[in-house]
Length: 377
Image (cartoon, helix red, strand yellow):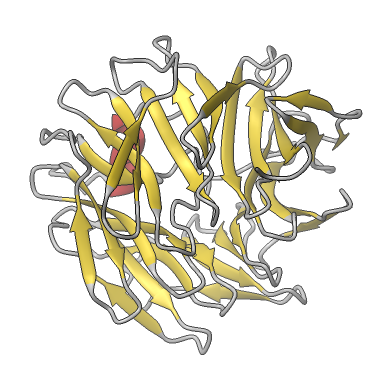
């Protein structure tokens, strides 16, 4: 979705210097030995069984503490996994996903959505219901380039995006009865993405206008759409406002049940700042101590829960990822996984549990779960 026909998702990843992994996850073998305390949380590292010792990346955690994500086998093919609250695992593949299955979101009923690549390399969405039945999802508006299902709420409404015949990303909603609605926010000459939906069916996302500037949007349940820009957002190419963007192909939940939205804004100096947009439209900007200030480094929130706690990453001036938690009182706690070269929190649930991944010094990637010590504040 640019003049060079690069999709919006690719443009975001390029402009923010996102780590070059595939649109998927990965895994290792076995649960980490024991746990430790990190930033007031019980920290547990884990590796999904059945992988080759390279990557485990959680994508989402529901309010029951169930995590979904993916792992790569010895042929570097991705498979989905479910990590239950008791740390037992289930592995699964979409029936036609011979070139990879990538779970992205899980609701509180245990329904999972994601994407898979068929034998021809074509991209399709999928729904795996809580009984294990998998259904392919292909938006009827899509060209031949594919559909991505990214988030599902407890009512079974799914949001995601598809590539149209011009190669631009466009947003869709899928109802529980299987019917589709195309969503076209204004100022989206180069397309739009959505990857968050709350229990009411409200979605948020990002658009890219004809000048390649990013803008946020929120679509209410009546179909009305509001676009917004955070204070201080840049107005140049690949600057602007990005609610909970794609990071490493992983799902973020940047929209909570109250309608609060978190994300990042890129200013005119290409520095990234965090924002909280409250349901009434008021903004709070924030930066993590130690965050970089040049070259698309800075503070990148990824998830907000119903209490208003935010987790995310910050990139230092060397472009390395670290984690942070912003409590609802505005206090910010940076953290790193023990022994990590980089730490990437992805999402937190309403209990304050955080799922993400970390890089060890050999470049292997492990999943982690952080549980608030004594419960969420």
